[in-house]
Length: 478
Ligand code: ZN
Ligand code: CU
Image (cartoon, rainbow, N blue to C red; front, side, top):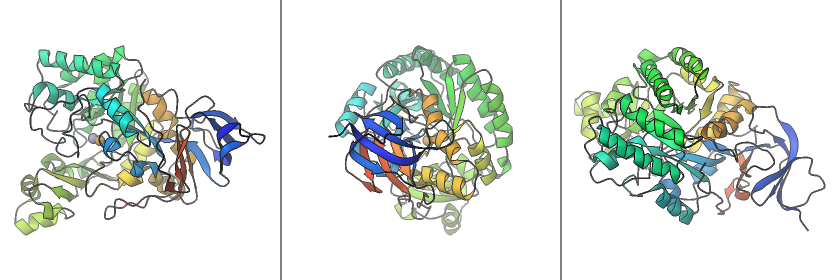
């Protein structure tokens, strides 16, 4: 005696467009939203009372390194408990597929647990993902550094030759045909810093043959050279015709505090004639491999883990250097391979970038490590609770748009990202009065508060704040 699978009654509905909320019911049938409005006469096989709750499209985490985690820990509690229903994996130049490394590889390959697992093709990856049955949807970018490793082996400290670029381009083309949604790069890293723009442009050109795919980049320099890097990214887009996304936009290092006032107008001007997007996470510390150039930019550095000195995990680099009687950079060299958190950003820049109307929210968290950056568990509730409710930097509707509709539009996910009839039923219900992150730099794996229910493709995967054990995710392709 039911006429839909799931009925969400009486919530305050944010549709993902940035428009103000309206009180409405949502009916879900066969994994899709079949009605948004007054569904008083309907009966759901399952019903959720949303009185007092905000109802939004499931959040899209546009910047993740979850490629391996969705296979190893398919419940993905770190994301579901934030209301995230889709992750874009394969960022910063590193992807799980197509990946057939034949040599030892430098950072950031050293950083990601599982990053040595081989998945020869995106088709293989998709099959493994289907077998793992993740709780959330996964879209995969193809990493430029991954392509380099496939074609150049461990010899990455140089530009690729024309022949190597052609081989990478064929590999990328195949990966896109098998369901990858774009290309990513990590030009700041040892694995790709020797790659000139002229190596990236021919690869980005391949994207033209795959509608709605894009190029996302961890730029060559997020510190002193940040403006030049923004220009390089825009130029890469202009020469290739690809839509570009500047990943985790920031201005690192004290000398560069305030410079988002220079970068955002350059981005804005370029947007008049080409597709340029960006994402941001709501923290003033970054985290990645322990690398000397990043140590130089940082006010302070927390060492998360070190292969040669595991006992130094959790200590400040400054203290280790003092204990050893060396400077920070020498201490960093000695500790490597290692991972770190860098306190290197200005709150004013963070706010300016987050308030910029075209920025999306992405976590950049690293799952599967012993002591992650708190963004892995806290990003989305932190925006909603801290920056919206407490700081009033954004309205709730604007923040939701940066987590949903804008992200879906940018990445070409035409079947989700909004609460509308006919779209996939990815839905989050949260309490706008209590939603907040609980993860901190000292206790980074605390789940957030205030995320109440999460629906993925019509399946309730979080109910009353608890994981249900059901997993409704799938691979997203264009
Ligand atoms: Zn990055
Ligand atoms: Cu990243």
